[in-house]
Image 1 (cartoon, rainbow, N blue to C red):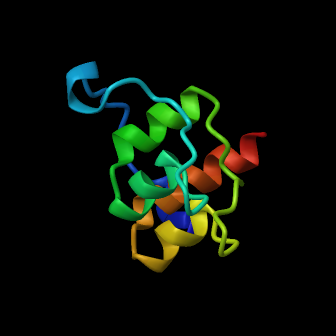
Image 2: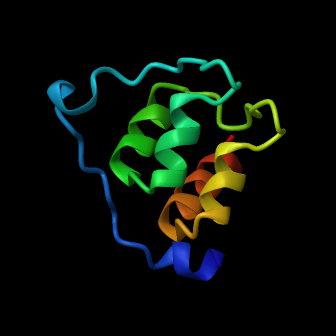
Length: 90
């Protein structure tokens, strides 16, 4: 999978504040964060925005699932690459 990440095109596309508001890390009642939700939905630009805002990549929800786990489970390969590269850079 990392080989695919190495050839992945740059996806630094920013959405306007009107699209999603600011990149804040908000915890929902079930322990999921906004980063969890945009990761399983596959919204790469917003995932990148959360990472740039220092969103908690490894924060688990109440079931123990991280954003990376959810992205992988929903087949969001590009998001998996973005999250993995971010985790390796830490």
